[in-house]
Image (spheres, rainbow, N blue to C red):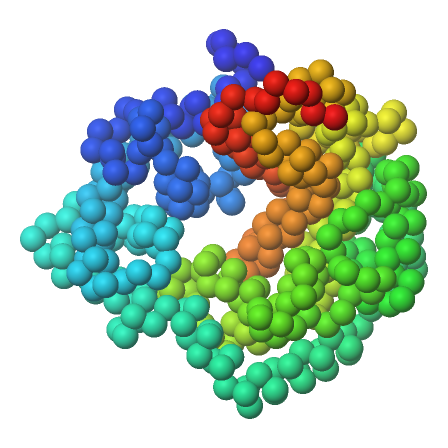
Length: 441
């Protein structure tokens, strides 16, 4: 990748360069002058650039036209961003005065500061009162957050008994389609071989996602999915962390009753907590409604209510076995898209270092080599975990990828973020001290 005229550029570099042209946003900036990661996640992407509507501006690499559009969009909002920074200072001060300690201050206050900036511009003499009122509205007059309300709702034994019975009723009465009845495997294979709008629309309209997801509840469901993976990718299915046994069991209602970390057996409470993190307070309904929505979502295939999102997930499932960065390039019989996703990670410097470590040439990090190598070996599982969380977020907000390009960007972005997560762990381990002198085998 080069950055010369007419070439693609790293999105992070484009953002940093544009951000440094906006004065008065220091509280939203990192030490190097660029925007904080949370500034990008909570303000720039969803509120300024609106990457959900303009996914081409959210890609890791931007062509010249996209880089220009991104820069112009950010600079056009400079005045409101300066006001956002000023409102954030007032919100922090009022949080302390109101003794609010729940939630991450940036997660809660960054979007709230932008909302205040949109409504009132730069803060004036009335700013302390307005900031305090906004915080009370967000957290509740008595300081009860959505999580507190959820905890209180699920503390009633009568409520939990009714909800558990209702979950089991919906779980066992969800209508399913045999995964092979509409030649879903052929549709998956066509999409992976060439992810075009035509192949994606055919797959998305087939109901394959819910069919395979609901099929996992049958004794033979895991074997059917494994055969589909083998047929599409040519690879055996590793442990993908979907369920503990041969079939998905009914998830528990409360988090304390979870017996593992498997994706499809997460508690309803944990899923609703994720919903509360994603939805601003004004957009949330009563906690009882949020729980009811999640009961329906939990009962659907792969725990995703919108069929198109379940289809995105099963597409990720058939791609996941090819994500084996420690093995280098994927075999030639693996579909091209899957090989490109694997190559995206396999060429990372820290992965090459890890492969040398396995060969006994050099150590990887001071001491947590085994843990990092294990995570690299389980890359497919980590990819699917992150993909499911992203799709659950879409389910909550009602967003869906409409085109093949958006699906491709989604899957590529999840692979990249999973890789960056591991790269960060390696860097932290290296900072902890010099590598051991003995080789790691």
